[in-house]
Picture (tube, rainbow, N blue to C red):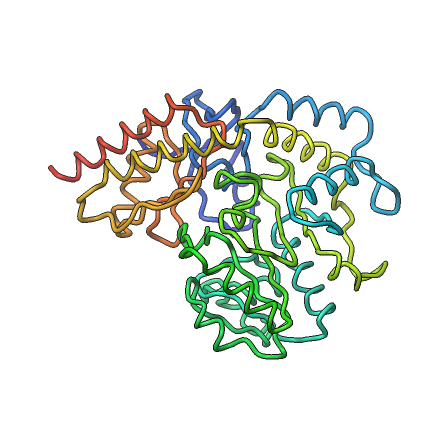
Length: 399
């Protein structure tokens, strides 16, 4: 079955700037882990808006929170107090150890990381930033500068911040060689998402964090893709004992589909911030923070993340069995509802098409990794159906 998209005219379609390689399909309705296209065909959504729709589509409690807030007041700006924002900041702080955490709200992951980097530089008085090869932190000039994938720099090299170095993800020694007394911060993803769902070896995050602290540098944990329970815990870095970030960034799943970003600063870093140092017109407005509070109401409910983690393990283990011994699959890896199946590029594209034809949406990261970041509410029947489809694909490749 070919992908298709119907619009009013080609002129309407051509009015969109060509920054995306879009599939020729449009979705008009969603419920739970499923979406429906313009022809009424159902698909199980294993992409979730790129790890955004953590509660799936049209979750009644999230919809009610958005509608209720929209019916009263949506935006006032940060010139005034915003009750929803204050409540949300307090709840985010409760997921981190100690006290004194302060949150700046924005609208996206790139903005969250931009704020983190700016204030790391200001609070330390240092210039250098240390990131990891294969990382992804955003597409603004500063976040692009610390993204360790040169393919994203093409055409924008002259905009990049020059005082950035890259070390090998997973190798503390590589980071130790670069750390010096002018490094303001180390920025890391607890799992590299756009890089192909790369999990760090045990102890890597805590060891690099310890090195940074001893060097007087700050540790930034980029939880934009991994936060809000994606890996089975609220923050992915908490899977490893001893990781003590100075700054944590979030976005994607925090609003369940409503744009919102958050940068959470330790009290020590926050102390350097004064009024006027940074800002966001829309950041943390009543509507987005009402949505985020509704998301946390569900994510933080007893047993929710345990259930999502267990179902993620069911999916991961099932895929490992399906693809065991297949020559075109290099690895099946992941944690919680964040899974990558690394294939050769041709096989990855073939799997995407095979899945689509059978009513499943998947995404390819890093050119060859089938990335699965479904809604955390994905159920066992949908997982079983997906595994059945994957098994059919594996069988077809052996013919």
